[in-house]
Length: 333
Ligand code: ADP
Ligand code: MG
Image 1 (cartoon, rainbow, N blue to C red):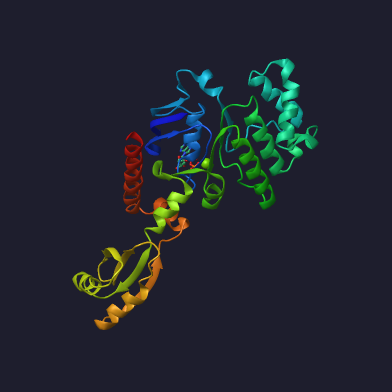
Image 2 (cartoon, rainbow, N blue to C red):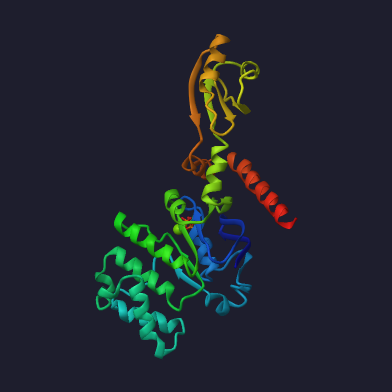
């Protein structure tokens, strides 16, 4: 199990990681999802002991990454954003060197390198210089280096960035294969990627954890946040009056910005389409609608909202936390 407690990383005045806490259990595939600059690489570098934190702790199966770095690092294989490859070595030379660094006994090294080369499908290029390999092959060599010694936990920073679609499919298959025997944590700025590969997603924005759940639950959460967005010149009190008798509405949020028309977010129950009812209500009141559209129903929308707006995350965090507490409560009964 991995425990990250109250992690903070400051670069001068800039807070790259802002009081991040989470626990990861063995045997799952976790995804760190967040836009560029969210703090994913910084967090991974701290978790793997490559970077010191300003505050907070990281425990790898109970071993503090700072106080017991050797015991903690032994459990981790890491593929950093830029894999530490030696361009003038052949694949085999490099991997045998990596095996030595990982403390694999000389007698076992050759066999283990061969086994891993087969596993990540680079046996056919083992005598080529790394500098002459394609990006896809280099990434696999980086992955081979991370797998060396078969650590329990694999941490992969944007493993498919810069790969072509065919290579991406291959890397994903490999990650799934790895996950059968390892806990895998990968980062990505692409929602579809973590959605497809991961059992559990942690959404990181501006160094903070803004949501964490299974892809299915995140989607459900979004689904239940479905609704309709309208724009109208009517006053907030008139808007409330007009919408009051309309069935299917859960809540209304009105934003009015100076002289601009009011923007109204109407939340509905999941799957309920109230556009026609809203249109008729306003028409009956003789007030024109300037726009009328459905809003916020895909995971992509939620992700965009969570990582761009300041106001929305709290509602979602509260929802995630509330659900978690309910689950824990149920679990403790
Ligand atoms: P991500 O991997 O999610 O794209 P990073 O962890 O690389 O994000 O970066 C998080 C933030 O920290 C960014 O704003 C980035 O500019 C800043 N940052 C990262 N490394 C350094 C550094 N060595 N010095 C100063 N700022 C840094
Ligand atoms: Mg990064």
